[in-house]
Amino acid sequence: MSTQRGDNDGFILLTVLTTTVFIMLIGIVSLQLITSNLRTAKAERYLVNAQFAADAGIDDAVQHLNQDNTWTGNGSEVTLLSDTKFKTTYQSWVTDGSNDFQKFIDVTAKTFVPATDTNPTYTRKYRVEMRGVGGGNYSIVSGVGGLNMINNSKILGGQVYVNGKLNMSNSSQIGMGLLPVGVKVANQACPVPADATYPRVCTPADSVPQPISITNPAKIYGEVQGTGQVDGTYMYSPGLVSGNPAPAALPDYDRDAQIAAVSETRTGADASCSLGLKTWKANTKITGDVTISGICVVTVEGNVWITGNLVLRNSAILIVKLGVSTQPVIMVDGPTGLTIRNAAGLLANLNLPPVGFKIITYASSLPCSTASVGACEVTGSDLYNSKDITTISIENSASGAETEFYARWSKINLNNSGNVGALIGQTVQLSNSAAITFGASVSGFTGPLAWVVKSYKRTF
Image (cartoon, rainbow, N blue to C red; front, top):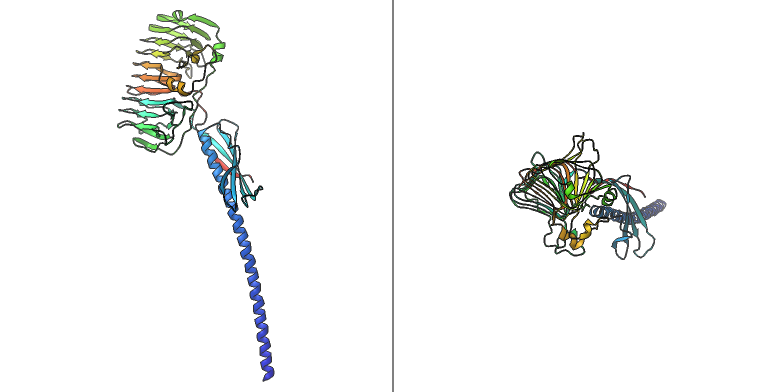
């Protein structure tokens, strides 16, 4: 009996020892797994924070790029998060692509553990290809003075881009239910009163932060984007959508080159006409005021520079010579610029496609804006004062179906007229017009007006 009991005791002891060792081994393995998982979790946390920093850098770069097409990056590391344990930063660069509608954003994000470490523990790098959208087929482009529509004025063709504000009242209308018109309003109309920082984009702190004002029964039919706009009342098909259009520079023109090319000079009296036929040769300078009236047809063969004012009235006609393939530019420097009224017309030639005019007025509140060469840039309070000076007035059934009308520093007033090509000015005002169907697009306004992400990939 005793021998049998001793054998059992030995067996139990061996079993207990084996079980203990087994449990200890399981505990050690579990502890190792827990430690490993903890290290992995911490590493993953820091990697995720690096990823968040990269995403923040990309979002910041996209926002800056849509506010400033020339933005090239933040220049130095930006700290996104910092505490006693770790810190995250990002830095971005913007480079041009192969054309005006392509840019690349490169972002490097870093996590430092601890926060005081000078060498990053984790790094993430991404490249985002950006695609420019918009531009190219706008029939109205206005600068800081914005677009004002009153009475029964209507825009039924072409897209609309407004750097300043859009004001619509009475029965004015943009687009129709079946023919919507896209509208972008950048809200670059502050501060008021103007100072050296004018123009800048308005913010909620400004007196009128929203850029679009519509009074019933005025309406917009089309996709509408407005920087700071939250009220989509009286906007349809689809109406107000998200988007903050950036201010876009008005088209540039090489004024000095046209002046340098002048090969013939004549007086305003000699260039004027009230009956019959006249010809203006290419690269002509006309000194003084010019009036074309009555039954007179003037054929224009190329660029013309008028140092005074240009008036077309009654049934007078300016027409581009048949066979001319380059759009003639008529620069008008006088303080009242171009006045066209009472059924007078600017006609394109019969080429296929037809070629029309481009009229540019340069008068502003500064005399240097019409200097013989080196026309000045008008900024700040001078630009604010210039935006309400009318230098293009189109009235009473006057027409210019293929013509671009461009008030470089000032205002266009279109009243009781239609059948015009395109309007560009610091301020554009439409009034008393039953329907305006634009027949041309703004040239020189083809760059992207917004940037969207095309592709997104990790590079490290």
